[in-house]
Structures are given as C-alpha cells and as structure tokens.
Length: 65
Image (cartoon, rainbow, N blue to C red):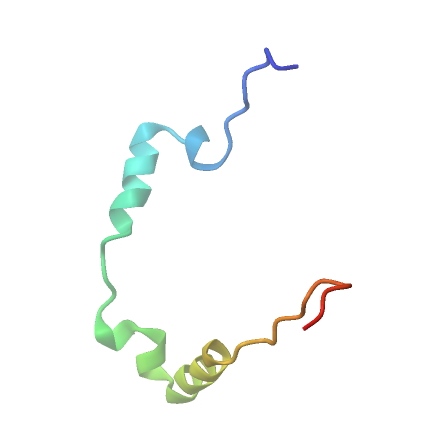
C-alpha cells in the first residue's frame, strides 16, 4: 500500500496554466461601490455582530472548567 502513488486532488489536479489563472484573481480588488456591505448597511451590521460574538469554550468531558 505504501508503494501506491498518491492521487492528485484539488489544485494539484489542475493544470499549471489554470492554477496561475485562479491565483491571478486573488490580488484583484472589487470597486468600493460594488462591495456587498457598501450596498446594505443592515447586512454589514449583522455580519459585525456575528463576527464579534464568540461562542463559549466548553472543556472536554471530565475536565474542570
């Protein structure tokens, strides 16, 4: 079983040209007027509330708090 080659998945399976094409999109920005939060103030506020809340950490069973 150790002699079997690994199967490629995800980005490794793509051609180098396709990987470069996808990677090039990462550095490009969206115009400020096209951003979702600039269009919907309520959406931005709700996302801020969700992102700002932290769920309480529960210790694994058997460990004291």
